[in-house]
Length: 347
Image (tube, rainbow, N blue to C red):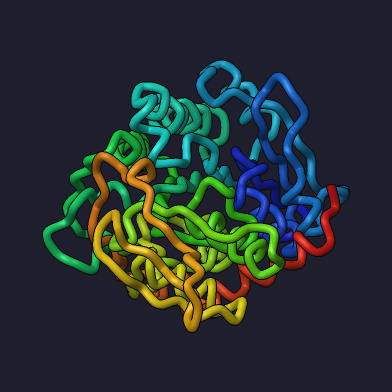
């Protein structure tokens, strides 16, 4: 699956991963069909920022993944060599507000598309954007492909249904289906609802004097923060394999939200000192009394897995997966990108 004769179908092309994957595949010479929600124009700002929105080998089509007949028709019409299922509900916090909607968006949609591939494009490689949230609160760390799954949040359950479906369709029907078990992966294209992008944008605005502080939730939550382009490159490599399989994509290093915030402010030349505990903790600009970070209990999740860190040895060995940035480099990349946007807005 490479070159101008190959076609990839990407659901959720408007999101961070979809746009980055589209750019990656287009640069490899592939044709890319991207899907977006019906009923309106697609959001193409990420594709525009990546410089591929006008690429003649890119085409956008509307698709509702919850409509099984529409999935069959779309896969039959496109006849893809690979289908990357990245669309769905991507925010853990939202899953507590609408658990059934999250399960449908992530679980049912995956089953619909697997069936469409099984019946209409049996040689295509199906790649799912799975999630580390399927592990819930694991007893041991780091997590790898053999770690028992025990999703706790509705989001984790929705992803576990999708992840399980990939394994089932692979074993039961011989579908070439793979799951990318994605740990946190960030970039300057991250949605602002995610804490890393919320931080990078706020820091850029604080540096410019447009904001004074940011409110965050659980500062002790630890995550494995990788760089999204590294993860999508690994997903593209997964689709080249003759057989489906599951791969953890992670850096193997856990960092707290506090540490990410410290790194983000440092990228803007602001050192942060931390005082207090729990909801009373604050981050104060060094050498001043300016509070830059406060804790707001409204941003705490009902369930928050305390430690998710992945072992990507298999992906490094079989896919050539590697991490581009450490935490400081990732935070700097994001703050600099948001600073450039703030100084030179395009919209």
